[in-house]
Image 1 (cartoon, rainbow, N blue to C red):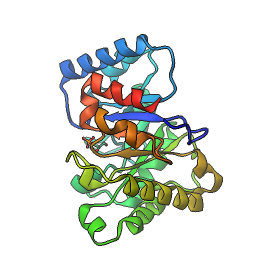
Image 2: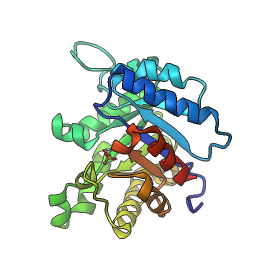
Image 3: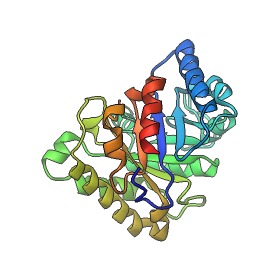
Amino acid sequence: MGGQNGQRRPLIAGNWKMNGLRADGLALAEALAAWAKGRQAWGAEMLVCPPATLLGAVGRVLEGCQVSIGGQDCHAAAQGAHTGDISAAMLADCGADWVILGHSERRQDHGESDGLVRAKAVAALGAGLKAIVCIGETEAERDSGRTLAVLSRQLSGSVPVGEDGLSGDSLVVAYEPVWAIGTGRTPSREQILEAHSHIRGELTGLVGDVAGAVRLLYGGSVKPENAAEILALEDVDGALVGGASLKADGFCAIYDAAV
Ligand code: 13P
């Protein structure tokens, strides 16, 4: 990275989504562990978020490596009658340090509102997890000039302002334009700069000085080929990577582009 982002240590996070049976997940984790064990310098943080079924097994493979693990969602409640759901404390109990919240696929597939994402973030912080809160406009919203208004609304509704545990370390915001996810299309440099600078400004209004330490990730069709250019942009403090995080060499190449 260009070093322009001061104290914020870049974060390269892999979101495996609903991909991989045990053999695939273990092979990927083993390849990452082998890479990590041969590495001396860790200028950026690396995180992988496997499906919940693989969290324990992947965590065991990566134990002792400088690679953290996280969940892809959690329930807002601490426990109880919520068939099929997983609490933040359960993720932490499995070895997770992180959880992705409010991904657009959950907002779309499960009707998650900003308020629900906020409640989940409160639960995550309460369980000692760090939260990656995802926001991003649809193509229709961008085409009708509503991108920045959508980002403002999602931020003010989803970020757990004023809650215990909220800090520049425990909150990460991922900007993922819905139209760039899994499509091979990425926004222009100017569009990413505009969105990230807007997010930083809005966050400052919400959480004050803490905003300067919050890492802002870009997500949507990040690949080894475009990572260096995206990661060098001001206010881009890392990447949330989907498809390209399913191959160890590609994901590690993206990491290398961040340091
Ligand atoms: P792709 O990298 O596959 O576009 O996915 C991005 C994403 O949704 C990460 O959360």
